[in-house]
Amino acid sequence: MRFVIAKELFHQVPDLCVGGVLASHVDNAREVPAIKAFLHETVSGLAAADMAIREHPHVAVWREAFQRLGVNPNKYPSSIEALGKRVQKSQSLPSINPVVDLVNALSVKYVLPMGAHTMDVLLGDVELRVADPADVFLPWGSTEPEVVDAGEIVYATGHQVRTRKWVWRQGEMAKVDSSSKTIFFPIDAFYGHTDRAARAAQAELAEWLQEKLGAQVQTFWVDGQQPEAQLINAAWITGTPGRASQ
Image (cartoon, rainbow, N blue to C red):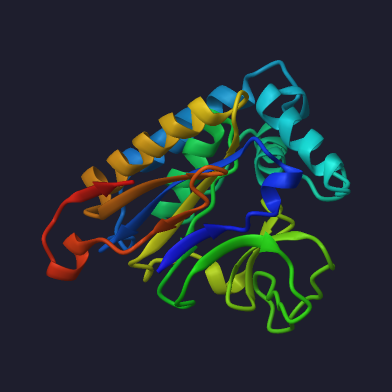
C-alpha cells in the first residue's frame, strides 16, 4: 500500500508537502478522558482568540492556494477554516470518538487541516491527484453519490474519492468510527508557511496514538522530491509492536 501525490500537482503547488501517520491496532472504542480534556483545552484557546480564523496565516495560505487553483475559498473553505469558524461561533466542539477528538484538537492547536481516514473499508493506495471522470464521492450520511467536478484535487483510493477539493470535505467511505482499527492521517502543508507546524503535529499525533490508543504507527513525509511513501510496515506483518519512520 502506498501514499502517492501526483507529480503534476507540484507544477501547480510547488511548495506542497504532506506529513502523516498510518496507525494500526487502534483502540477507538473506549473513553479516553485525557483526549477529551485536550480537545476542550485547545478549543477554549482558539475560541478566546481575537483574530478571525480566516486572517490566521495558516488559513490565509490555504485561501491563496485555493484561489490559484480556481477554487472559491468562500464557497469551499479548507477544513481548518470551517473548523475554526465553528469553534469561534459556538465556543465548543462535540466529542465524537477518541480519534476524531484527537485530530480536531491537534488541528485547532496547530491551525492545520488534518484528515483521519479509515483503511478498513477502502483497501488500496491512497492518492492525492486530479479527479478522474470515473470518480465517485459519497457524502457523509448519504447513500447517493455526488458529482465530482472535473479538474478538482481529491484524495482517492481507486475511483472512490475520500476527500473532495483537496481538504474541503471528507466522504462517508473514509469516515472513522469506533470500530476503525487502521487509520491514515494526512497533514497537508506548504514549505515556508506551515511545514514546521505539520511536523510538530505529526510527532504529537503519533505519540498520542501510541500512548493513549495502543496503536502501532508509521510516520511519513511526502513532497516534490519524494512524491510517494510505502505504507506497509514489517512490524505490523510480524505483529511486533514498534514504530517506523520514512
